[in-house]
Length: 383
Ligand SMILES: NC(=O)c1ccc[n+]([C@@H]2O[C@H](COP(=O)([O-])OP(=O)(O)OC[C@H]3O[C@@H](n4cnc5c(N)ncnc54)[C@H](O)[C@@H]3O)[C@@H](O)[C@H]2O)c1
Image (cartoon, rainbow, N blue to C red; front, top):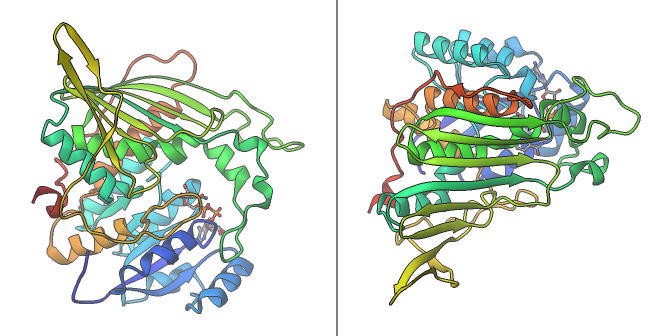
């Protein structure tokens, strides 16, 4: 995604994730960082000296910077609503890390506020803009496996509580915020990675039938979490308006598995890990020989000609282009259109993630409220 002008962004929150943005923003040299702000002044100083950036003295100063058109809200999830609201009220577009907010009503308020002011708010994740998701989407559009009926998607992250998470540091020295991660919950942190793919490909979800539970309450020895029982696993069945059913599992209990299987009448499309935005899309076709019908034991790679051959930066155990969503929003504003990660699309992703997280152990079927206009694929994937 290239642009002939310059777009100035400001960053709020320079914790663990901001380095992922710093590394991936390099691929978009037309996006300039006007300055950054964090309420933690020690961390702010450490960060700006590491990258030689301008630090704002206050949030007010950031909001008054006339160069800035987009604020990257990289604060912790429970601060997203307040920070995004202030930015929108100040007339600035927002690219928020996931989720848009921790409550549906707050997320809806942000979207309504943006629409009211003629602004946009987009939420990560943005990996639907990556080669893998675009290729998978094209394969579905082209009915490479016939009519799709069912999807199994996994976002298992391994037994994080057994790892040395207290030792994890970002490139510029921020600790991994394990307490916050456990309190916010893996479903709010991770489900969006596949929800965004599924919603772009299949459209809105009509209903969610889910179970969520806290299997490991004592993740941090000697510390009581607040709340103490945020689910560390959820399983949901999503019924899409177009009839497709998807099962999405999100845990920090089961061994690492970020795979997806898209099952159609004529075979299965598979991706081994959605956190690698350049992972191959693999295809297993259904064959019939005489009276026997079987799925090919061999996986061929389904490739699209014309996919941009961009080298993705290693963002620490994954290869995700975190900055692509920012670039897409900036281009959309310049072109006078809605971002592919439009406010209502981001709201729908947030609503379904909340339905999965909040299901508990005896939930009724949840009927979604939000809807979004169809998302368009990237032009290269249609050539
Ligand atoms: N940690 C990861 O591996 C990871 C990966 C991908 C996405 N994310 C997402 O990125 C976001 C940030 O995560 P993180 O790990 O960097 O969290 P973090 O806790 O390390 O950093 C958040 C930063 O925001 C600052 N902050 C909080 N409220 C603020 C406010 N009102 N004004 C200014 N600064 C404020 C904090 O002081 C902190 O430095 C979250 O939404 C998370 O879901 C995290």
